[in-house]
Image 1 (spheres, rainbow, N blue to C red):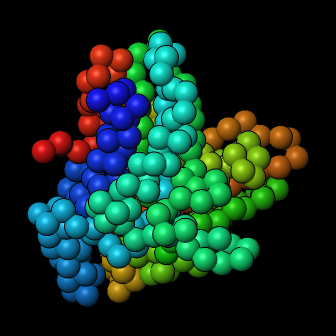
Image 2: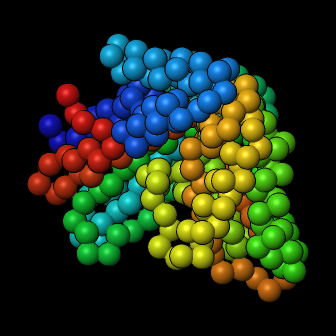
Image 3: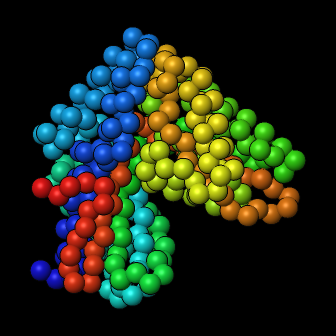
Length: 295
């Protein structure tokens, strides 16, 4: 097996994991939420969700009919030399996984219509690259994002004078507008500052962070906790059926320094089917799955 074949095979496994098995932090959080929720309709919905992802894992079938549009986060170690052609490798992996898992084809031409049939197309899969100082591995996260929750994401170009109060209001207004449409309980990622595209990119990247993990900056950590509490006070509950604790699983926030004239806020929403899977591939051919256990 060539090294590039190893990357492709690993990525196919990541897409299968993402579609059929929730990361442990998400599955455990949903089980705890089921126990804590007191609203009978939401508690029943959570029970169905827990049963559903259990069956999906046992049978290796997708937990939702929407298996998402393919997005990758690729972190390249500075000492990892074999990165040429990785975009083509990930594209092949998406096409393979579509047939082998199988996954629903979700790549549609927005201008002339028509589905590509294999989850690839212009700029899709979309690949986000970053570099890791001193590392000797390649880290790939498969993040097939569902359409229902994506439709509820929002960008706000706030006035700087609106400050933290304005940021909170925009996030809560986004959740109020979303209601039950993104299939709560949701995970909310918030990006603050930078520019319009930067805020949304930062917000979506927050959906990769493990549930319960707080931002190292105590002020941002408090903002995460305040918004999580406020969102659950909306009472939408699981699948919008009403509930006291089951509208959101967590809120994750990060920021970029902004221009003096603007205060962008990007809100990315993820449904309960939090499809993400990560692996590290080392130069010696070892593969370490960080979010799932390989059979």
